[in-house]
Amino acid sequence: MAPKKTNIKIKRSKINLYNKKKNKARRVLKIVITVVIVCGLAVLGYGLGKPLLKYLREKDQNSSQPGSTTSELMSSVINSQDENTSGESVADTVSDTSDVSGSNTSDTSEPQVQTADSIYYLPDNAAVNEASLTKALTAAKDSGCSAVAVTLKDTTGALLYKTDIAGVKDTSVVTGTLTAAQIAEKISSAGFKPAAKINTLMDRQGALYVEGNFELSPSQGGGCWLDNSAANGGKPWLSPFKEQSVQYIGNITSELSKAGFKYIVCANTRYPAFHGVDITMYLNNLPLSDSAKRTEALWNVINSAKTSAENNGAEILLEISGTNLIANSKDCTDAEFTADKEKLKTVRLTVNYDVTGEVTTTSDTSSNANESADYKNAKNFAAKAKAALGDAEFSVHLPQTLTGKALEDVNKAFSEAGITVL
Image (cartoon, rainbow, N blue to C red; front, top):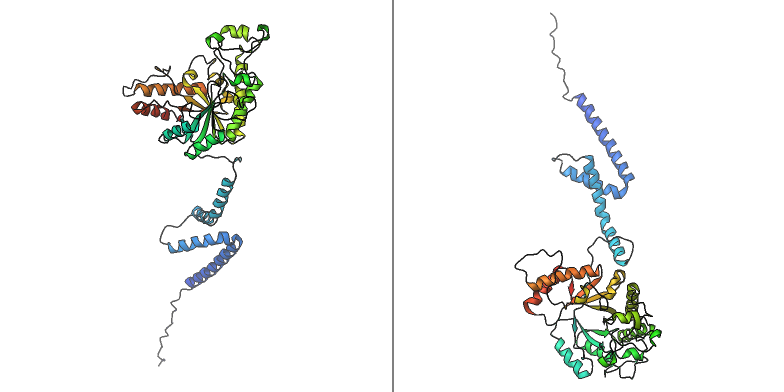
């Protein structure tokens, strides 16, 4: 009998050899990738590696979300570097910008608009003595102005303060009892910035003492020229063609600015109202028919005052009549010097709003019934003044008689035109 056949069971392993090899390969690949990443981090350095690790950690934490692209990865790295360095860079930039003024770096910020001091003008004789000055300053306290202007050289040429200027010191030209320093100190003590007003070339007294007057031409025998016959009250004037006149105005401005006046308002920088015979006969030795030389002579006086004031930390303001400024002819008015538009850019102007009657412009097409006559006139005047002065810096001084609704409308018109009202 044949032996019984025994069934042999073959134990089959559940291990998939393919999967085993695959898992082993994965482990090897992970090791390789890890080594590559470590080497990469070592090469890139801490500055780049830190943000990269940060990204990988965040990516691992958010693995359920769609994967990031290469560009997103680089963006993350770059942004992380900016976070690490932006604090120091911005601080350095700000420091450099704030420490360097007038450098070649471009500034795209809005220009700073310099605000002007509002000036309250005291009566012409306020500085004659201490009592009148005290009274005038008391009246100015409620004006709301930051500066007070006092006349120290009037239209007759009289000096309303004690001066040390040679030629006029201790003469009848001096009518004031206080020194310039005393007047400036009294204004400052009242809480205002001191401003002095001087009438420059309109001078009926000092002109002869400083030998700066207009003289008859040699063909007429010489002598003092008067703006009218002596019988009709004719008076001398300071001539801008004479060096003595130019120096005299410079000396006055220097004395006042040294005394503490922050502004010197120069008024009546002009020629007298010449007759035709004055130009062709009595003063034919002067270039009065040459508009360019006339303008140049006026600016010699202005620049003398400007330089003297600036040397002592003060500023001049050139006063002009608004009526003269918008007139067709400016000859022999206080607006004649405005013919030189380039020089106008070097000074500040104060324009007296003294116009009377209706002011019109060719571009005035407004028919708004709600606009008052005061508003329209001021609006039209602003347009004409800007056209006459070009790029010059100027402010408008309103008469103190302008009040109520009229004042409100005029202020509105100049505000809309971008013109400062003093």
